[in-house]
Length: 236
Image 1 (cartoon, one colour):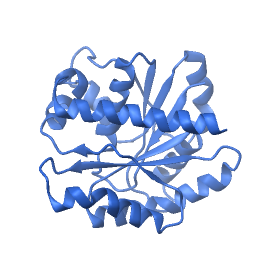
Image 2: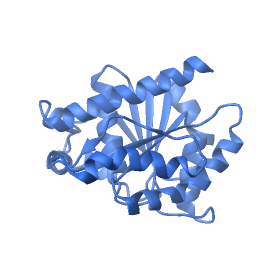
Image 3: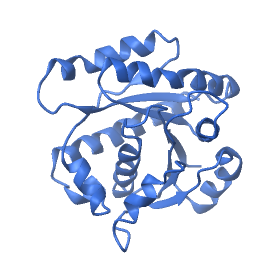
Image 4: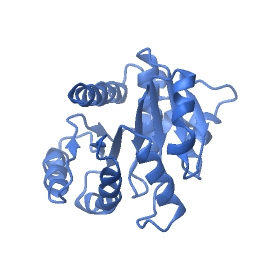
């Protein structure tokens, strides 16, 4: 059975598609059979792939912006022999009465873990916290299979700044106060031009600029995410 990871944050502009696409490429280049489900009605992942006539991505993409992910796709994941599945969730929908919230809830129900990219500012942390009631609802429904919640700092200034140095501690403090167990990952993704250039040519950073600092950060993130999932599996 594959590891299924929902990349979710109801705040737009936090880098969900960037993290999803680049993590999928890192997993694939490490030898895993990877699928990325584009669950965002805006289809940003598909647009990224279509920026090149023939796909240069080392993984498969399937558009599925519907609130039936947990019902329709898990059997398909297993039949196809995928090792890792990432679900790029839509932004918005702070309440459970919106279709986007239904899509995200369905993705969470299908997943072993949720990875939340968050920009390193207090306002972004507070906006990201809007998703926590949804995570709590899903966790209640999944008592026998707890949802691992991972948070990654995305878009940290590359230069040493007070904002950058305090980002990790601030994230831990804000999200711990909400009462939901969340692991803030040690790996942080910096703001780099490479992240804007790679999608324009339909590539992932690991292939577009394999020797770059951005590529190093992404590979470290992929390694840390897998380590967290393996620890969870061992504890069950």
